[in-house]
Amino acid sequence: MLRRFFLRLTGGSGEFLEAYFSRPDETKSDLRKVLLSRRDSLSEKERKKRDKRIMHELEELFTAFEGMTVAGYWPIKSEFDPRPAMREIEKAGGKLCLPAVIDRETIVFRAYKTGDDLVKSGFGTLAPPETAEAVDPEIILIPLVGFDGTGNRLGYGAGHYDRAVADLAARGKRPRLIAPAYAIQEARRIPSEPHDQRLFGIVTDGGTRTIMEVVEDGEIHLEPPTT
Ligand SMILES: Nc1nc2c(c(=O)[nH]1)N(C=O)[C@@H](CNc1ccc(C(=O)N[C@@H](CCC(=O)O)C(=O)O)cc1)CN2
Ligand SMILES: Nc1ncnc2c1ncn2[C@@H]1O[C@H](COP(=O)(O)OP(=O)(O)OP(=O)(O)O)[C@@H](O)[C@H]1O
Image (cartoon, rainbow, N blue to C red; front, side, top):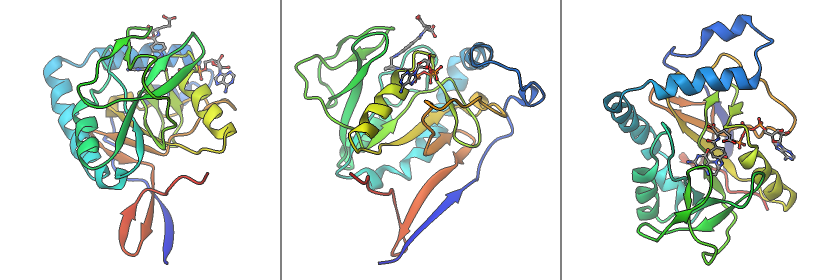
């Protein structure tokens, strides 16, 4: 069976934060402020337009999610709304889950089906209740504040996802992190620390970035996780 790995570096709308290239001393929290305000500044109309473009890019991946456990997220603030994509993933045979906040450091993933009840879960998020089954996602649609072209991710700074992915890795799981994001959330460089988990793919309204694909018998699949 032919297996070929390649890195696709396409897209990119040139909307990234150029200013930070010349300032290597830029801290994560400074970057977070600037990138959050960029995201917040999109009008509702502009956001909807960009959401459609991101959804269109994501559509290419849905069939690859068949039979996989895929973590979505319930959007807060000015994040891309992944819920229409989650419904399509479900239709394509993916099993959904959502992150639930346990404490300031910990999140877990709980099974979710469209229409299931959700409960308040900290930091303004909603999540399945404790009674929902705990699952280990193979694909994580991961929200972010910022990213760079090499797959570094900047979150809200709690380390929730970084810890959750490290925990999965410690148990032999290798979830693929795919970030739907607005092109304006790109910075020339996001500082990377050892605990930071690198993105597998970044799907933006300016194109799909840095996504690793596996081509098998002429078809594009996401690599199945090695457990
Ligand atoms: N929609 C969504 N769900 C998510 C996350 C996320 O980023 N987005 N998470 C991602 O990890 C986890 C929840 N963790 C979060 C941690 C901090 C903040 C936040 O907004 N923090 C404040 C600053 C910190 C504070 O208030 O102490 C902020 O940025 O205003 C949000 C979510 C799991 N669920
Ligand atoms: N695997 C880990 N083990 C212990 N501490 C961690 C781990 N991952 C992250 N942290 C800690 O969490 C804090 C926040 O990390 P960072 O600023 O990278 O968060 P973030 O990636 O922006 O947030 P998130 O992952 O919640 O979206 C840091 O103090 C970091 O040391």
